[in-house]
Image 1 (cartoon, helix red, strand yellow):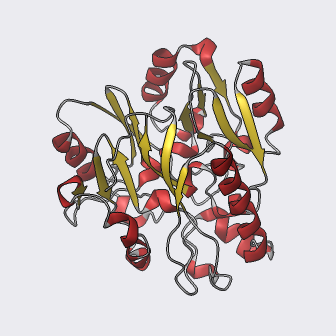
Image 2: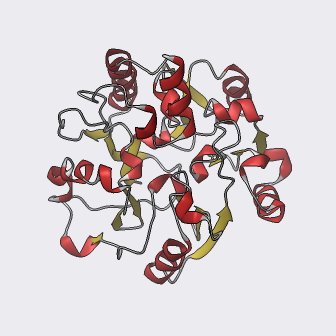
Length: 303
């Protein structure tokens, strides 16, 4: 059996589900795009090729192997994009919460049944249908749970709005001993403005550091709360272009080790200057789908 344990974003990783790019299907039609960045690349003829994405994910798997981490992969479903395993489920404490994701993607959960079968039934939470939530919006952080959301009345009109007010309330009910802190995110059809998930504009790191992009937040006071929480001197503020390139979507294997995209030169230099070990891998093709390293992982056990 798997004894789940995830209380933050940085404690030493022991077991993880890493998505797969195999058999991810044909290039979507423009009307099938789930996010503005994918649409941009579909229209430009630069949508990523499966073989390139498979190589990128293998590079990520090799880093996990280097650090002795147990890696589970989804069963490969034919013509199904299964790269972003963070979307379909997430762990808080000892509980795994299955996401109510876009209906087209529900079969992705079936592809990790071999993992779910190793988790005691009482540790798997299936939220009611009205609760919309994806793992990219949810970050356990010690006493806190940070949640990205969008609560305006036009929520149903935005395919980029993935986590609703009902989800914030539901998670609060499930974890009454945690402080729930929600953040209104900016939704846009312009990929350079759109914060698809909280991890597209914010990422806590080890050593008390964090990555942040101000314009990803709709409410300045909520952004400022994070600045005050981590301390301005500990924050790496990214530009709109760097948010677009997914600079905040790195992944911590431990408080000292961060996996980052090899082209993120400004960030990677800063991380090393702060004393981090940076494992650089190629992930630029996958980023064309508005997701990166954190999005591709579903941590199951951290120390």
